[in-house]
Length: 296
Image 1 (cartoon, rainbow, N blue to C red):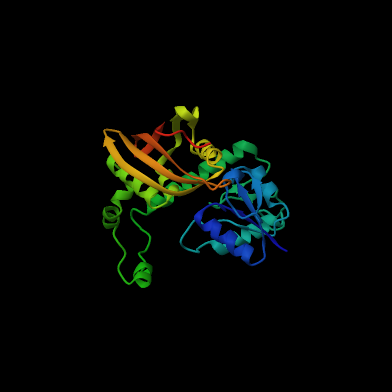
Image 2: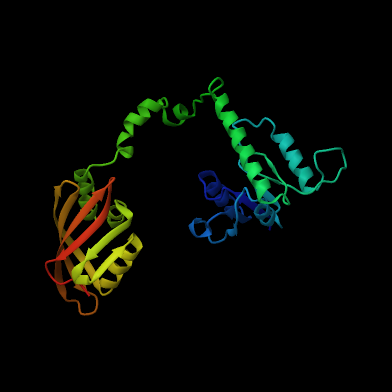
């Protein structure tokens, strides 16, 4: 089985390449900076490293039969020469006089050459060269913009939106919601049983204080772990909400949970009032006041 090294495997293009290669029965190796956040299929071999680190690229390339490097242009001009040059480098023959032996080199996404023995300083030079080339390319678009295609019209049956029209159509996605809007979305998510959507409206470092539980928790994961502990023996049959009641940067919601004990089958209700604080369009703080004792 052949092995293909993928750079940018966690990006939009790279993920499709990974999926396609795995489906074709090809072994996939991915060069990633943070393996714990890569979220790639279990069959993918993860190699820790940065594309700008020559030693990491060299190590990741050992035993690979091919590599996927994102071509930096919409045009294929120059691709043949680049492919020929890469083949010569893999053979250990540099770009000088015919037959002249060179040290092996790795190729970055922008086509820059990185000598595996150059060390960190060489990596910095390559990064700077890549940025300079990118700046030159983007500057050239002022006078010679990329050609406009008809792909959108062909696929959708209507002309593509201008950036101004698209921005107006999607403005709400970029606007920070008011406390009232956020509170309405939060309550609507709970009523629809979309607890994941409700959680998405909270800040990652959400603080939850519940005196009767004896807890002050920071972070979504800690809060979810606490909920799983409290509700380990309960099944929620339903929930009634009253609110939201909004004032300035805070809103309150009363929850009444209809519960069934998984062991005894006994039904019970738990009522609580949660006071939320909002900042920058996210729920950042929750204070929980129980009308009846908390579960567990």
